[in-house]
Amino acid sequence: MSAKIIAVANMKGGVGKTATVVSLAEALAASGYRVLVIDLDAQANASICLAGDSILAMLMARQATIEGFLHDRLLGGRQMSISDCIRHNVSNVSHLNQPLAISLLPSSPELRNFEQMLIYELTQAKMSWADIVKSLTAVMSTHLGKARRSYDFVLIDCAPGISALTEVSIRLADLVIVPTIADFLSTFGLQHFCATMSSRGLSEHVKRPSRPPYVLITRRRKVKLHAETAAMLRNEATADKPAFAMFATEIPETAAIGDALGQTTKFPIFSQKWGPVVVPLLADLVDELTEVLDVDRA
Image 1 (cartoon, one colour):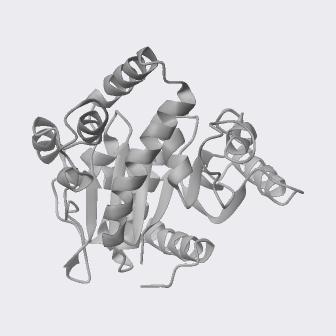
Image 2 (cartoon, helix red, strand yellow):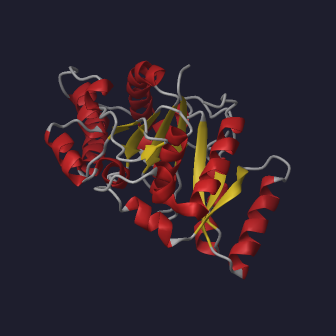
Image 3 (cartoon, helix red, strand yellow):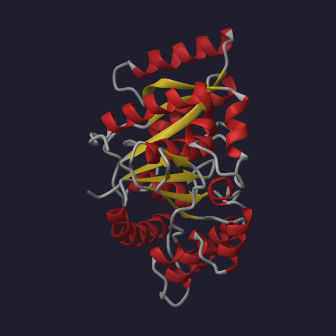
């Protein structure tokens, strides 16, 4: 089976994109799936959370990162394949006495500079934004198409906003997950962002996602504002021609998630890492996700 590609994206920062990618990757792996995480955020938080800073530093020194790969394919000697930059078995977490089957295509802080340089170089070559996105899509689609045969799921951690790489990720994805906090500022502009993934906005030269984006409420607190905003979002998702669908599962605001993301040098058990509150919710999210994507349970 060819892997299902899931892009985790939002215009907003600080809404739980990386936490969603890391926790969902480990929950899917704990359910028996083979998972590849692609980090497209220059903050490289997903890379650090999964591989740790010492391994990430080694990969950066070898240029075995997403920007190293893209630089070689688009501006260099075209000698690298995407498999040259994938680090296997990065997770230090086990489940049922087995290590989680998670691989990583890491990012680094150089990604932002690379993307700016790439756009400058290609626009100097008289390429339009649509042409740049088309070229990036062709490279990623070709090389990811080969790699995805080794996995069940590919999770892409996108940077906040709409960059060229985020647009490519959305277009390659079988599903886009949009984490959001249930408050006014976090949901302001959510409708527009999700609508850009359908018939409006973005490049006209690449395919539209076959499913609506799915909003995942994160950092949910038991306060009136969050309850009212969550109810409003669920009402919008049931309207005629909605801009998005919604997961029933909601991820609470809890210190356990922050603690789990910081455990990069320990070797915890999956259930211990995420704790008794979050683990059942991740199981529910995996159930919903596999149903949406029509994937057989592992």
